[in-house]
Length: 530
Image 1 (cartoon, rainbow, N blue to C red):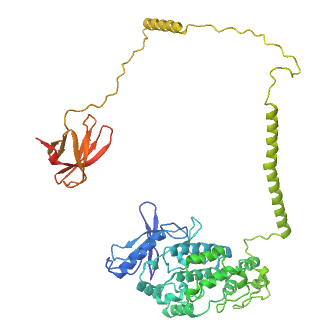
Image 2 (cartoon, rainbow, N blue to C red):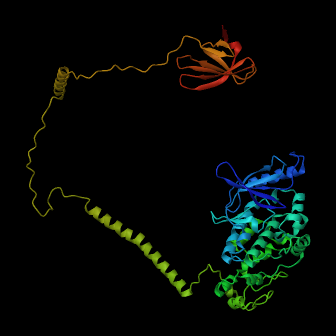
Image 3 (cartoon, one colour):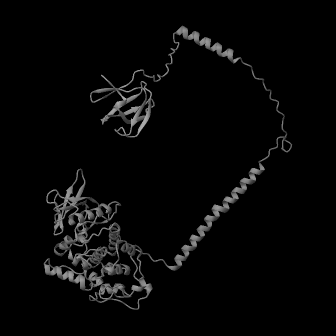
């Protein structure tokens, strides 16, 4: 259905399966000439494909579904067929008419969902290796961010090294990828670059031209240079259409988020989060000491981890890039608050607690004390009415004696009465001709034993099977285990020939109760009928 994207790492085409299923097919540029496990490239390809299958064994809302993978019929190019996601990618969301930066709230949403995708992949041993802006899409159907394109995941080390050096998105590459290495921490570094780009409106080390010298300069920057100040870049790229209040609020990036980005962008892989699971834990639980990073500057990378005592004035004043904007006198109580939180005064909080306690006490009283009183009342009433005065001695009025006359029952000869009714009904039926027709009750037919021995037909020959005992073999072999079967031939007995091998007939016997027995009959036990 047409090409979606082409590049040095392969081409992605939009495809359509039988029906209405739309997919995206990525074809890798390096062919595999021999489909033999002795071939290292083919063996590596198969191993990585098996890992990709594990990614979809448990569906994840933030990972694209792998539909199929294999080699093309012409050219033997490896391909991956993935679910087609309808919606823009991050690169498109940072271009006009959208704002050049993400809001803090949307950045935190993407951080949670992309970390969830990485944790899911790393748990099954899959390293993505090509995380960048246009490999993360916003699904307009579900509202989730989806991680796409596992092309590098199925390449060999040599193919990956060559692809990265000549065609990879060098702005998102970890320092170790310059040597063709790829670890779980490599995906963590690219994750940090994406968060930096969403907040700052630009990657830490942009690629000015597509020439080889420019690519090498960017890679050397990843390996040697400190990361530029994120806050200064964000302040520089905030849209002018935002009001001063919104700009000030959007400069109030939580310290924990800056700390996560700083750790993801460490030059040494061992200093980053070990894998996606550890990264997800840090984001979900904000698992670090806020007081330790408050007012501190990360050595050598220009990250500002706290705001000044007046962040609104700092945001609007437009301080020069590279200025830390830190007030050492900021106390731990002045940590920036998320726009999602709501402040409650202490007196109001205490009042709410007291109200809850009062409601709880009233509920307990209604539930237990009132119910106890109700039980006592029922008990007193039931005990008072437990005895009755049948003599009338204690009644306030005089009880008159019962003078009602009781008539004795009339004796009726029911047998004679019924005989008389039957005779009258019989005479009426005879006169009117409406006497019922009595149909004889025919008992159900019982299976009768047949005196004729059954005849079996196989390959144009007929065999007669004697009544009584027969031997069913487990296999068409005289040495096989055999079982004695008692066959009672009735008009409901059926025997069917299924196969003939090695002088044996495989038959299926159905007895009078519908029970089925299968086995092999030796022809020597049968009599051939002419």
